[in-house]
Length: 159
Image (cartoon, rainbow, N blue to C red; front, side, top):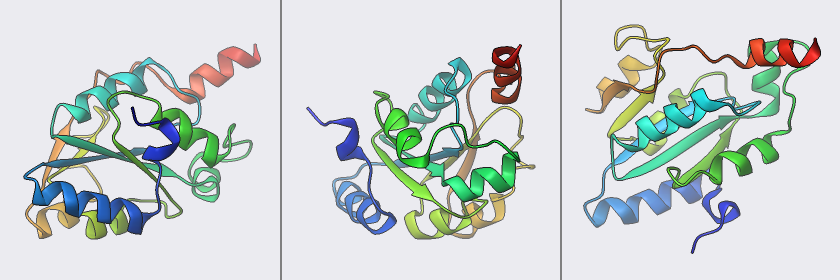
Protein backbone atom coordinates (compact mmCIF):
# COMPACT_ATOMS: atom_id res chain seq x y z
CA UNK A 1 0.00 0.00 0.00
CA UNK A 2 1.30 3.45 -0.92
CA UNK A 3 1.86 5.87 1.92
CA UNK A 4 0.73 9.48 1.80
CA UNK A 5 4.36 10.60 1.86
CA UNK A 6 5.17 8.47 -1.22
CA UNK A 7 2.52 10.34 -3.21
CA UNK A 8 4.34 13.67 -2.81
CA UNK A 9 6.99 14.55 -5.37
CA UNK A 10 8.78 17.34 -7.12
CA UNK A 11 7.38 18.54 -10.43
CA UNK A 12 9.97 16.47 -12.32
CA UNK A 13 9.23 13.36 -10.25
CA UNK A 14 5.47 13.66 -10.77
CA UNK A 15 5.95 14.31 -14.50
CA UNK A 16 8.00 11.10 -14.80
CA UNK A 17 5.34 9.12 -12.90
CA UNK A 18 2.65 10.45 -15.23
CA UNK A 19 4.64 9.63 -18.37
CA UNK A 20 4.80 6.01 -17.22
CA UNK A 21 1.07 5.96 -16.42
CA UNK A 22 0.20 7.46 -19.81
CA UNK A 23 2.20 4.76 -21.58
CA UNK A 24 -0.14 2.33 -19.81
CA UNK A 25 -3.13 4.23 -21.23
CA UNK A 26 -4.19 6.06 -18.07
CA UNK A 27 -5.74 9.53 -18.04
CA UNK A 28 -4.76 12.37 -15.70
CA UNK A 29 -6.72 15.09 -13.90
CA UNK A 30 -5.17 18.03 -12.06
CA UNK A 31 -6.80 19.87 -9.17
CA UNK A 32 -5.16 22.62 -7.15
CA UNK A 33 -5.57 24.81 -4.13
CA UNK A 34 -4.16 26.10 -0.87
CA UNK A 35 -5.84 23.45 1.32
CA UNK A 36 -4.92 25.52 4.36
CA UNK A 37 -7.58 24.14 6.68
CA UNK A 38 -9.21 21.04 5.25
CA UNK A 39 -13.01 20.91 5.23
CA UNK A 40 -15.81 18.93 3.60
CA UNK A 41 -15.73 21.14 0.50
CA UNK A 42 -12.16 20.00 -0.16
CA UNK A 43 -13.20 16.35 0.14
CA UNK A 44 -16.01 16.80 -2.37
CA UNK A 45 -13.77 18.80 -4.74
CA UNK A 46 -11.04 16.14 -4.73
CA UNK A 47 -13.48 13.25 -5.09
CA UNK A 48 -15.16 15.06 -7.98
CA UNK A 49 -11.80 15.66 -9.63
CA UNK A 50 -10.81 12.00 -9.25
CA UNK A 51 -14.01 10.98 -11.07
CA UNK A 52 -12.75 12.83 -14.17
CA UNK A 53 -9.70 10.62 -14.88
CA UNK A 54 -7.77 7.54 -13.84
CA UNK A 55 -5.18 9.49 -11.84
CA UNK A 56 -5.52 12.66 -9.79
CA UNK A 57 -2.62 15.03 -9.29
CA UNK A 58 -3.11 17.80 -6.77
CA UNK A 59 -1.07 20.98 -6.87
CA UNK A 60 -0.76 22.53 -3.40
CA UNK A 61 0.17 26.22 -3.26
CA UNK A 62 3.43 26.82 -1.40
CA UNK A 63 3.59 29.01 1.70
CA UNK A 64 4.66 32.23 -0.03
CA UNK A 65 1.91 31.81 -2.62
CA UNK A 66 -0.76 31.27 0.07
CA UNK A 67 0.44 34.37 1.92
CA UNK A 68 0.16 36.45 -1.27
CA UNK A 69 -3.26 35.03 -2.19
CA UNK A 70 -4.89 34.86 1.25
CA UNK A 71 -3.22 37.66 3.21
CA UNK A 72 -1.79 38.10 6.70
CA UNK A 73 -1.84 35.12 9.03
CA UNK A 74 -1.98 32.58 6.23
CA UNK A 75 -1.12 29.88 5.71
CA UNK A 76 -2.18 28.36 9.01
CA UNK A 77 -0.20 25.18 8.30
CA UNK A 78 3.12 24.90 6.45
CA UNK A 79 3.17 23.55 2.90
CA UNK A 80 4.70 20.20 3.85
CA UNK A 81 1.90 19.50 6.31
CA UNK A 82 -0.78 20.61 3.85
CA UNK A 83 0.71 18.43 1.10
CA UNK A 84 0.81 15.40 3.41
CA UNK A 85 -2.81 15.87 4.49
CA UNK A 86 -3.96 16.15 0.87
CA UNK A 87 -1.88 13.09 -0.08
CA UNK A 88 -3.67 11.09 2.63
CA UNK A 89 -6.95 11.25 0.70
CA UNK A 90 -7.75 7.99 -1.10
CA UNK A 91 -8.80 9.95 -4.21
CA UNK A 92 -5.36 11.57 -4.57
CA UNK A 93 -2.61 9.79 -6.50
CA UNK A 94 0.13 12.43 -6.63
CA UNK A 95 0.84 15.76 -4.92
CA UNK A 96 3.21 18.51 -5.96
CA UNK A 97 3.82 21.79 -4.11
CA UNK A 98 4.15 24.81 -6.38
CA UNK A 99 5.28 28.34 -5.55
CA UNK A 100 3.48 30.34 -8.25
CA UNK A 101 0.11 32.01 -7.69
CA UNK A 102 -1.54 30.04 -10.50
CA UNK A 103 -1.06 26.57 -11.96
CA UNK A 104 -0.09 27.52 -15.51
CA UNK A 105 3.44 26.12 -15.17
CA UNK A 106 2.11 22.84 -13.72
CA UNK A 107 -0.40 22.57 -16.55
CA UNK A 108 2.26 23.19 -19.23
CA UNK A 109 4.62 20.67 -17.63
CA UNK A 110 2.17 17.91 -16.66
CA UNK A 111 -0.38 18.43 -19.47
CA UNK A 112 -3.28 16.77 -17.64
CA UNK A 113 -6.19 15.56 -19.73
CA UNK A 114 -8.53 17.44 -17.39
CA UNK A 115 -7.98 20.55 -15.27
CA UNK A 116 -10.52 20.53 -12.43
CA UNK A 117 -11.76 23.62 -10.65
CA UNK A 118 -14.38 24.16 -7.99
CA UNK A 119 -17.91 25.40 -8.43
CA UNK A 120 -16.94 29.01 -7.75
CA UNK A 121 -15.80 28.95 -11.41
CA UNK A 122 -17.42 28.21 -14.74
CA UNK A 123 -15.51 26.66 -17.64
CA UNK A 124 -15.24 30.16 -19.12
CA UNK A 125 -13.93 31.86 -15.95
CA UNK A 126 -11.15 29.40 -15.12
CA UNK A 127 -8.03 31.61 -15.33
CA UNK A 128 -5.89 28.88 -16.94
CA UNK A 129 -8.47 27.70 -19.48
CA UNK A 130 -6.45 28.96 -22.47
CA UNK A 131 -3.35 27.09 -21.28
CA UNK A 132 -5.39 23.87 -20.98
CA UNK A 133 -6.97 24.32 -24.39
CA UNK A 134 -3.58 25.08 -25.98
CA UNK A 135 -2.45 21.47 -25.54
CA UNK A 136 -5.86 19.85 -26.14
CA UNK A 137 -6.97 19.35 -22.54
CA UNK A 138 -10.36 20.18 -21.10
CA UNK A 139 -11.64 22.02 -18.05
CA UNK A 140 -14.15 20.42 -15.65
CA UNK A 141 -16.05 22.07 -12.82
CA UNK A 142 -16.32 19.63 -9.91
CA UNK A 143 -17.43 19.45 -6.31
CA UNK A 144 -20.43 20.86 -4.56
CA UNK A 145 -21.65 24.46 -4.32
CA UNK A 146 -19.15 26.70 -2.57
CA UNK A 147 -20.88 26.62 0.84
CA UNK A 148 -17.63 25.87 2.66
CA UNK A 149 -14.96 28.49 3.06
CA UNK A 150 -11.69 28.35 4.98
CA UNK A 151 -11.90 32.06 5.82
CA UNK A 152 -15.35 31.60 7.38
CA UNK A 153 -14.20 28.49 9.25
CA UNK A 154 -11.20 30.35 10.70
CA UNK A 155 -13.46 33.21 11.76
CA UNK A 156 -15.79 30.78 13.54
CA UNK A 157 -12.81 29.27 15.36
CA UNK A 158 -11.63 32.71 16.47
CA UNK A 159 -15.02 33.50 18.06
